[in-house]
Amino acid sequence: AALTAAPRRSSGRGAATAARTSGTGGQMMATQSVVGGAQAIDVSLLAYFFFWYLGNYYYNITNKLALKAAGGSKGFPMTIAALQLGVGCIYALFAWVAPDMRTVPMISVDDILKMIPVSFCAMMAHCASVFALSAGAVSFGQIVKAAEPAFAAVLSTFVYGRPISAAKWVCLIPVIGGVIIASVKELDFAWSALASASAANMFAAIKGNENKKLMTTPGLSSRLGTVGNQFAVTTLLAFLFSLPVLALTEGDKVSAFFDLCKTNPAVFNNLILSGLYFYGYNELATMTIKKTNAITQSVANTAKRVIIIIGVALVLGESLPMAKLVGSAICIGGVFLYSIIDQIVAK
Image (cartoon, rainbow, N blue to C red):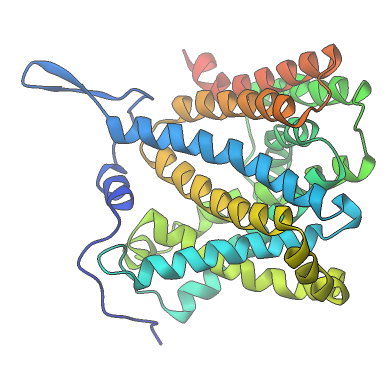
């Protein structure tokens, strides 16, 4: 049975713009078109990039502040991760209820069932990432997370039967080597942070492969309506999946967490802000990817990692020894090369 609701008159401007331009995959970051003999800059695309970066930057800061105020890895990392998804759900539901903001997706129960693998992996990737950032420095967690292509390559080749080129395998050497170099002199190193960030990479890689399979479902994109709706439904399902995990890991501490929120505004305020930033930057990232080509995405993701690793470390006073900077540069450079090597070889 289809889950239907009366469609509203128009979707959000950002999502509508993304939907109208999703087929223009050849645009670069500063996409230009000739209008009346003059070049016009795609202002909406530049805005997507700016707010994607800004949201990601502030998410990492507010997330770390909430975790530190709540006791770090020994506090309530799973509770915070689950409630961040819950904050995103509240925003998504508001967007569907508010007049003229976003159309309600016309999806069926079968569509929801097909979205379960993606949503479950999204939940696990987020929760593992939050735990990693609670156990160690944000900059270190981001360096390890930059190695996601290595996990994606192994899964794609040996699980999904989509082997990568020999050139891409070679590019994984600096990716993995960079993480090792960055770990050697890491003052905030913790095995739990390394393991959790690696788990986040694994689930993110599975999510990417499952999402490719999902998008081949006939008519699903039209039933969802917009990229924003796709992310909203994924977030709602991810939040539901997080509740049993929360009950198993920190269920006996939830009441203590809410008591802490009442007495420590830093926990509550940064929880709400990090939840909004997380939802917002991920939705904007999805819209940005829809409007750009593969090389632009590679450049954008590389630049984002550099900004987050250095910027957040400076704000939070985290250590940035030379080995960490060199290792992160090698790792991120390897990731960028991994993203474009097939195009280079083809030439």
